[in-house]
Each structure stands twice: as C-alpha cells, then as structure tokens.
Length: 342
Image (tube, rainbow, N blue to C red):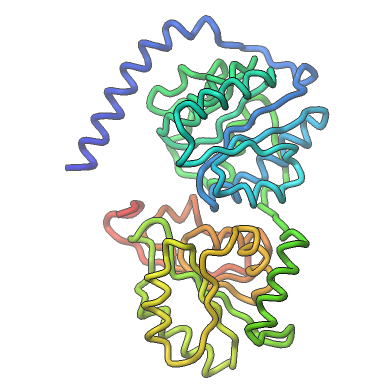
C-alpha cells in the first residue's frame, strides 16, 4: 500500500511540475561554453557512500574545466570526505539543525558567488538538490529530470530507466555538457592529522603494524541491508581463533546499542571504535587489512582506499552498488522483492 501511495504521489507531482515547466522552458539554455565557466557549484549528496561514488565526477569536472573554482554544497556530516578530495576548492555545509533563516542567508551567500554553473548530483526523485541548484541562480543549472523536477534546471538531463553502476549514473549528469573521464574509480586518502590520531588510538589498544587488523561494521542505513548481529559475532570469534587477528568493531554514535549487543556476545576480546569523527574513520579503515560489513558508508570508504572487503549486500540493486574490483567479495541472495530497501 505504501509503495502505491508513493507512486501515485510521484506521478501527480510530475504532472504538476510539467505545468510549471511551461513557464521555465524559455529559460533553458541549449549552448554551453566551457571557456565561460570560472565558478562552479556542485550540490552534493547526503550520505557517506554517495559522496565516495561522486569523487570521479568531481575529478572529471576539474580535469575538463581546470580554470574553474569548484565549491560543493553538502551535509556537514560528510565534510571530512570532501575536504580530502583535491578536485574540490571549497566545501559549504549545512545540517539538520540549520534553521530556515540560516538557509535564507546561505542562499544569499551562494548568489553572491555568481556561479556560472550549478550541478545537482541527485539521482532520484528528491526535490531538495534541484531546489538548491535553482536558488543559486547560476547561469547554467544542470541535473536529472526525474518525476518532473527538471523544471528547476535550464539544462535538464534525461535519466535512464535502466539500472547502471552508480558511479556512471552520476557521471552521466555531466555528460549532458560533454564532460567525462576515463578514470571511474573512486579514490581517497586519509589526512596526516587523522593518521596520527589513529596510530595513537591503535597503540593504546595494543595493535602494532605486525598484527592482522580486521574491521567489522555491522551497521547500515537500511535495516533490511544489515546482516544479523549474531552472524557478526560468529565471524569475529572464528577469525580471532583461527588467524589470531585483532578485530575492531566500527560504529557511528547512533549504532552504540548494536555494537554493545555484539560485543557482549563475542567470546574473545575486541576493540571498539565508536562515534569518532569521519576523518578518523577513514584513517582507521586505511590501516585495516580487511573490512567486513554491509552495504554502507565504511564499505565504500574501504573500496576507495583500496582495502579488501567482504560485504553482505542485502536486497539492494547489485548493478548499482556492487563494489568493483578483485579485492571485493560480495555475499548476496536474490529475493522476490529485489531490488528494494525493505
């Protein structure tokens, strides 16, 4: 029933927005001059994994428009990732606690930059990214036209109905203005400051460079994509007993109860890494020999760092989110509802 209601809402929204597009159509720009672009706003995505898979797009924009300054508008929670992306010149943040008045001030700040190009990286029906792009008043406004949201762009891009890898899906947005790259692999490095903090953390926990260090992240945004806690308990104990490895349980602040449940059931001693800054998480994962987890932010961080992974994918679309490369093993079973987030 919920799916039906959502579908009807999106169809109704598309009809209404199509009416609005009659008024915005005259503002659409067919031409695009790369030489005229010196200031770019990218409206980023909200979650950790989404920003990791956006890195090739940031890189492609800088490669094709090296003269341009690139600013990214993003959720404050992912700032630590974006700060380590060399293609980005400036990160502008907002959060859940940002008031309506503060958002108005932010809109004014964006407009004061006189952006030549604004790009919304949203790949679903969400309206927020498109609205930020429109409010920037950039000369060129680019993004996917999904369920009518394209009326807010003057360079709307058609979204393919066929599932493709999410990296390509985001890159296809800038293909609409003939930008692209051959290097599609997300890559990130930890900051020196965070590396130092993690070295101190591991030393205090009795971990040296000679130890086999395996990270386990049992959390994830969607409950349906989380492996059962008792399975992680079994895996941790077996690895410790067979390989004498150091196991570190990784969790965000909101996952404390889950981590406590797993820690209490594990027979052997494990290390807890809970609620630390994202930059420290990146540095920690870079020290691991292997990361085990679900389809979540830490998994995508590990792949971008070149760390081996074993992940449980759940019923999500494997074409879009499957980690690429020989270092990544995915455990998955097809379900009648797949792909879904139920």
